[in-house]
Amino acid sequence: MASSLVISLITTSTLALTFPVAARALRPVAPRDGRSLGLVTLGVVAVAVGVEVFGRTLAPFGGGPLRVLIGAVRVSVLLLFGCLLLVVAAELLGRALGVATWVAARSRTLPVEHLTTRMESRRALLTQATTAGALAVGAPVFLRGGLWSRTDFEVRTIEVAIAGLPAELEGLTLVQLTDLHLGVFTGPREIGAVIDRVEALRGDLVVITGDILDHNPRHIPEAMRALSRLRARGGVHAILGNHDHYTGPAKVAQGLRSVGIRAHINGSMSLGPDGASGRGLILAGVDDVMAPRIGTGAGPDLAAALRGRDPDDPVVLLAHNPVLFDDVRHRVALQLSGHTHGGQINTFGVAGSLLPYVSGLYRRGDASLYVSRGIGTTGPPVRLNAAPEIVRIALTARTPRAS
Image (cartoon, rainbow, N blue to C red):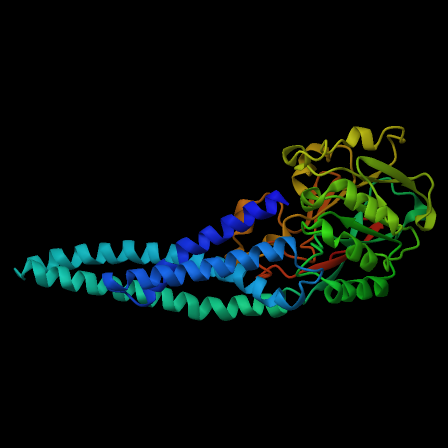
C-alpha cells in the first residue's frame, strides 16, 4: 500500500501547484488577497488528499458513495495540469506579443509606463481567456469520457491466421478480456455487464491478459466472486499484469485459482479439439515485464513456459505488455496483450507516436499481435478516443478475410 500513498501524494502535490495558477489566471488577485488564495488552496488540497488516500486504501469494491468524488478529484488534477501547460504557453505568447507591441509603439515614442501597462493587460487577458476556454471545453469533454465513453465498450470480432493450426482446431474462438482494473471504478455493476456480454459470445476459451485488479488487495475476494461467473468450454485462463503485482501477485493468483480460473505464470498447456486438453496448439502465459522492477516476480520466461512442449506446435501467448512481442515473435504464432488501454486519453492520437504498439492487430512475418484497449481505467476514470473493448478471436489456418 506504500505505492498507493506515494501516488496519492504526487497527485495532490500536482493539485497544490496547479490550483492557484488556474485561479490566478481566471481572476488575478492583488497581493493582499494572496493569503486568502493560499488558504483556499490549502483547504482544497487537504480535501483532495483525504479523498485520494481513502480511494486508494479504504474505499469498498465499486467505490461506494464517494466514488464520484474520488473520480472528480482525479479528473480535476488532470484538467488543472492541462490548464497549467496552457497558462505557460499563453504567458510565453503574451510576452512575445508584448515585445512586438513594445517595438511598434516605441517607434511612435509612446511613454514606457503606457507600454508596460498595455503589455501586462494583454498578457493577462490572453492567459485568462486561455484558461477559461480550457476549462469550458475540457470539463464537458472529460465528463462525457467519464460517464459514457468509459463504460460504452465495444465488442470486436477478428480472425487470425495460425500457421500449422490443426484442422480439428479450425475456428477455435478465444474471448479476450484485459485491464479490468477491478476496484473503485470497475465494480460489480461494470464487471457484471462485461460478463453478460462475454457469455453471449460463447467463446471456446476466455483469456484475461492481466491487470485484473487495480491495486487494492482488500478488493480481491469480491472481485473474484464477480469473476466466478465466467465460463467457457475450454476454461478461463489468466495472466498477471503490473497492477496485479502492485496488488500482490500471490494473492491475486490464489484468488483466480479459487474460482476455477487457471493462472499461467510462465506456464502453458496444450489444446485439442473443442478447447479440450490435447496436442496441436499451445496456450502459454508469461509473467509481466515490470515484475522484476516492482520486485514481486521474476518476469517473463517463455522458455520455461514452453519447457516440455512440442517445438512444432503453434503457440498462442498471453503477455500483458505488448513490448515483449519483438523478443518472442520468432516462437509464437499469436500474442494477446493489453496494458496500453489504447492510450486511454488518446487526444489527437498522440499515443501512436509514443508507443510502438497501442491497439489493434499487428503482424510481423508469420507472427501476429493483438493489443486490446481493455475494459477499465487507471488514474482518472476517463477514456477519450480509446473506447473499452471485448475481443472475440477466431483462429484459422487459412488467410483471414478482410474485416
